[in-house]
Length: 477
Image (cartoon, rainbow, N blue to C red):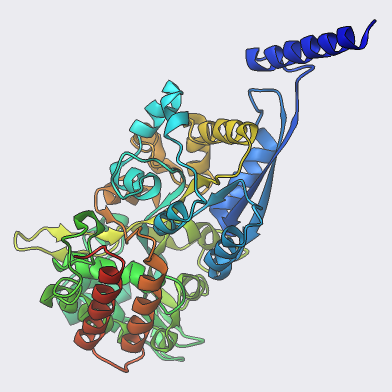
């Protein structure tokens, strides 16, 4: 055989192997594909990895490895940011907070995925079934545009965690009624109906010192009625404060109004100041750590699981630890409901809150094969069977056909509050300047939380900083 004939034969064989691969054959063409993924280290991502390892079978027949880098939440943004901007191209996928989209899309790190969705009717149908709040927050940049970058990994909302052994105690019920002329909320439905006045009354009522009686027993330690996030780190106060501002009719800077939306006069409007002042007024009824600026989502969760708080507002994503007797002293004493709302002029509760959770995103340097296998994994993850299993195992689903199924509320005790909360979710900004906005705002909120300045001074400072920064960036004209 001549050299030319040999080369022609090799080319024919290679073409045949490629044809087998494209046509779906899985024998001679199977490959090893590794997907390196950065994720925050908490139950929703641990569950995802477990399901992948135990159940996922790639349709291609390739051997696909999901190599997950579990990063502690307080370090998550800084480590992912350092990796992406260093040029090391370590990750093929990441779980990303929604507010990262602008910075990392504009930086050239996150891949637009419209082409994959448009080429796959099943995936397009799933995306159309995602609740609009999460679709816009997790997938679109610019916000609410038709440019798609992400898929829901774990959608999250705030819920109220309650100690039903204390809240439903007959003696505490009678004493609360006598003091406030209203019923102490005990059931999930009663917690759903709470406004912030009722929540404040719980805070006042359950401030007890070591040795005092609680539900007929002497306390081994000080006890408190309420807790919510009030931490300087990352976004741990903004995520709670935004809800107070929105519920009072105020707003944060609105990126959908670029370039006509202002920061000054909006961020520090009378309604926004009232919302922040209301938030600050409740801290006195919380454990003293709240006044130090270190009451992040993990600290309030820890205090609740240790049995030191009657009611805690926190993310569903932390809920599994409260149900586990190995990590919770109150695992068999729990009730869940919606977060409190603000009564509107019509007497109905206004329930706006900042959504939580994260999307999957793809990086721009992946091979076509890595993207293909990553998309197959995303489709599998968003399939009804896995979404139901995830919800039953401690996760949540933003897919309407999944969460609207009557069986959904039976999976976990907080799921009864899930669908009812979805229409009340908004999100923080997604622009490239988000981290500068967030860091300055968190610093200012911390000064207010620790008693160093009032609500008006705080929001005046935030508004001026945002107006200057966003004007310089051309986002405010």
